[in-house]
Amino acid sequence: MKRLLITLLILITCLPANSAFWNKKSNSSQNSQQTAPVLNTQTQNFTTNNSSTSTQTTYPNDVNGTPISEGEYVGENIDIEEAYRKIPVPAHRYVHDIDPGEYQDTRYSTWSPYPLFRLTAPLFYKTVAIQPGYYLLTPREHEGKWYILFKEAGKIKYIVPCYKRETVPFNFYKNNLPQIKLTTAQKIREKALKLIGKDVNSSKRKPIPDTYLEASDEDNNFISIIVYFGNYRYYMVLRSIQL
Image (cartoon, rainbow, N blue to C red):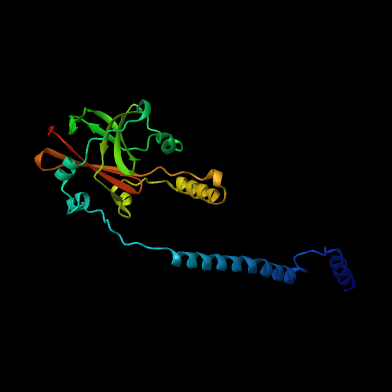
């Protein structure tokens, strides 16, 4: 019996001061203290996200993927033949046929952001005859009026006036352009880049404007062309036979 008591005393004496047996209660209290702020932080973040989400502006879905009506493009009170006859042929030109705004539009992209127009037959705007070819359609303002530049190999070949300019309907590009499907790894990478760019201005990506192009035949050999570029769309009218 004495040997047993002596053995127990020796074992108790040899146990380290920071053993799990002695610090069981203290460890549990420390863990509770450590987890408490984490829970509070998560609750605070959740509350902040909810409040920010609730203050965001929401818009109705004006485009639901169905075919777009003709009136949405041309408008009810616009006579394209009258616009064709009324608007004069542009008289201004650019130095060396170079678009001065192209550098600003392409400095953050590796390819041209302008919509590409493939023309297989000549089109006419009064005395201007646009020959077949591939053209980058670029909207530009000059003295308060808007024009479409037909550019080929970096040079301006033709200038056609616009008879109307208006904002693109909300969600138009989302419902009419194919959406890129990202893998899980790509989604994680995009979220990480956005998180970094949120606080570091130099790492923010400059988005390329969305573009869209619509051309349709009208009565009396008129061709209606609508150029979508960024937040605006530009209307112009040409003819398949010179008037």
